[in-house]
Amino acid sequence: MPLGVVGSVIATASGMARAWPLPPHEPEHVPESPSPPRRAGFRRTLTGVLRRGSRWALWTAAAIAVLLVLVWIASYAADRPLTRYMQGAVNQRLKGYTASLGRAHFNPFNLSVTLYGVGLVQVAHPDPAIARLPQVWADLEWTSLLRGRVVAKFEFTDPVLYVDRNHFEQEAKDPTPMKEHGWQDALEAVYPFKMNLFRVVNGTVTYVDRGGTRPLELKGLSIDAHNIRNVHSRDRVYPSTVRAEARVFDRGRALVEGQADFMAEPHLTFKGDARLDQIVLDYFAPVLERYHVIVRAGSLAAEGTVEYGRDFQTVHLKHLAVTDLDADYDYRIAAPKPEKAVAEATKEKAAEVSNAPDSMLRADAVEVTGSLGLINHGVAPPYRVFVSGIQLSVKNFSNHFSEGPATARMTGRFMGSGRTQVAATFRPEDKGPDFDLEVRIDDTDMTKMNDLLRAYGKFDVVRGLFTFYTELKVKNQQVNGYIKPLFRDVKAFDKRQDAEKSTFRKLYEKLIGGLSKLLENRTVRKEVATKTTVQGELGGAGGTKMNTAQALANLVRNAFFRAILPGFDAQLRGGATGERGRQVGQDQPPHVDRPVGDVAPPAKVAPRN
Image 1: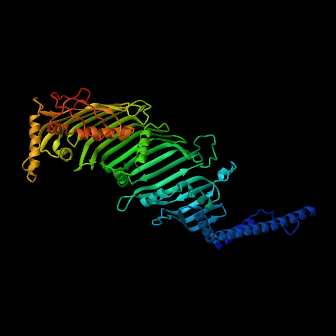
Image 2 (image 1 turned 180 degrees about the vertical axis):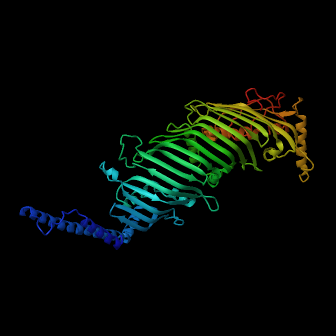
């Protein structure tokens, strides 16, 4: 407050004194009918008192103004020692992190504290800083005083949080849990009252996985959390209101609204609605690569409810849509690790999660469009198979299937050419995975499968069509069904394509082509057909139990990819007779039956488009 303001205050007080209503001044000459002497004396006394009172009010107002100015000046004079004190007090309470403070100011008129230029670094990786807070404001929540509670409210304006992979890895190695790093004590060092309101205005959160990759970024982040200390509505399960909103990767939007109990033990609880729109998936590529998932394109939208309780978690997706997806799973054989027992225990735990009583995942409707593929680096040469033009619909999915069976339907083009239809039904997992699977692939151009043929058959083709049928049923840890690959019009040798191949290689591929010709069915369809019977116990090595996702992955790897070329391989070995089962969980080639004459599609497989 400048000195000119002091002058204005005094002038205002003087004006008020002059404007004070006083009785009119008595004239010097007494009229012919004068008032009694006693009455005139009372008036003069009253006038004197009022004049003395106005002067006293003027000086009192001026003194108060001067005092307020002095207090105001003193509050700014105390900024420097207050800054040093708060910075030291905060750092004494933090573990593994260090804070810096540009300036701290205490406002004595509303008892608030404002911090400017706050920085936070991780001791192990101080560059870059993980947080920049231009302004932090703390004040009393005056309305709570009416309920006899003294609590505070905190507001963070334009905060910037920056985290990279080094920060996460260091936090993972730190034996101190995140909640025990002293965050609450540090805030109380800034303002000595428990926080009841937390607000973020226009925040930015950035995560960088590694150099050269696009950051995962939230912009325009706003968070409002009220009644954190449960000052109001004590009888409610979730007494606090929470709302958070942000832009995701510029195009997307995320919104969370609900109620929470921040004082619940052993952890906070929350129940509310969540919505995601236009979340671009290729931003997650650096993170997903660590899990062997390669994402090149796609966007996600979802809407649902989330409940995170004391001893249970529930996620209910009303709708989930992934559009224009372009992704692959990069399969690689993991190197053996000495912690084999730990790995097996992890597999068992993963199998139990799918039906855990304290965890519920439910999706009313899931829709996916785009392309999905598998890159197999577990063989030489590696190959990629994919289904393009996917239209996938999943309904009533749940890890408990408590609302009845889930169904999945998918159409697409195998290797971009073969018409593909998939139908599946998933039932409650009372005794392990329980589902039916039907797949039909018609007339795939085999030249697009040459990498796969080289990996398993050690040859390639210049012409041919591939068709595939299967029906599999999994229940009570048992799998039963069949696999039937068919080949038509196969030509496995071409002088122009094979000019630089060895003589032995050319002879082998001629034999393949000639054998295919001899095995053609004497029907109009001209097909080479084999049948693989799949039956036995569902399980991995060592009797490890599987969940539904693991069972499906093993069926695809062992029952599909290892059965594509059984006709060629079996006939080159002299053929085999009879049908026998195989254990799908083991990495072994399927049993191959002799060629069958009638290759009409199975009755229960979805009809041809």
